[in-house]
Amino acid sequence: MLKHVVLVQMLSYLTAKETPLWFVDTHAGAGVYSIDSTFAQKKGEFKDGIGRLWVKGGGQSELPLALSEYLQQVRKMNPDGVLRHYPGSPQMALQMLREQDRLQLFELHTTESEVLQKQYANLKRRISVQPTDGFAGLKAVLPPASRRGLVLIDPSYEDKADYARVLDTMRDALQRFATGIYAVWYPQVQRPESKELPGQLQQLTAKGWLHATLKVMAPARDGLGLHGSGMFVFNPPWKLDAALEAVMPALVKLLGQDRHASYSLKSR
Image (cartoon, rainbow, N blue to C red; front, side, top):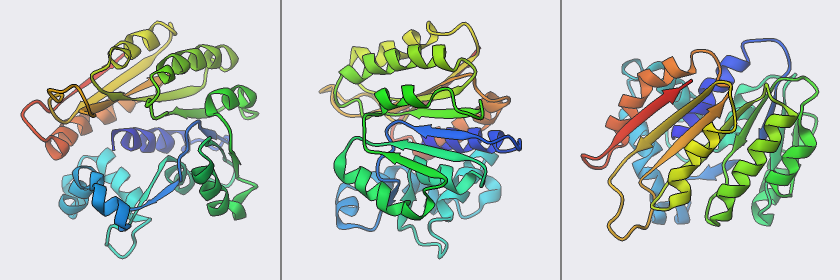
């Protein structure tokens, strides 16, 4: 949810200008996820995320604006009011982008890339799906022709080598397209690479950045599992920090699972 709340705010700001925008997702996934499937219901991960907001978010006027705007994008996939589908980053971007904008999606996993290609087969003029490694593929599309771009980098980090690849990719991307907006998602886990990543990202730029973290519980005693996540944004859009300052306390209250739930928000 943190990733998508931030994404919606960035897209809202960037689409306020007429100039075409390129959205690049290096690890696009399947695009749309079925919440009412047997697998999703069995795992139940959505229940502690969008499931909580869906139940409590009926009165949207009580929500911070950024959270309400995010929920609006989820509602577009569930117009009858029953939570059955969840839009991933590509779908959220598609819902918010305009005819003049373009989406470049990378997904190495064969099954998910095939799902993406089928799902967006009728939108080839606007969406390009490449069944390849997004880290390597990003080099070929920077800088975008319009010189306006938002890049989302969100690997699974199941392979700890992903942390080093994120740093190498960002170092190269900033050389190719220094004015682009880059959003890097990472998990908060009991792994030194996760704890060191934000500081390493800061060292890559002398320009502006924003770092938001959301912790929903204390780390597990066995050191396993996810207890939060973070978003590091290079060249953040104007007023993104203000929008998140208003919404982060609400996310802690909504998603927190114990007294250790908290957030942090830093920028330069």
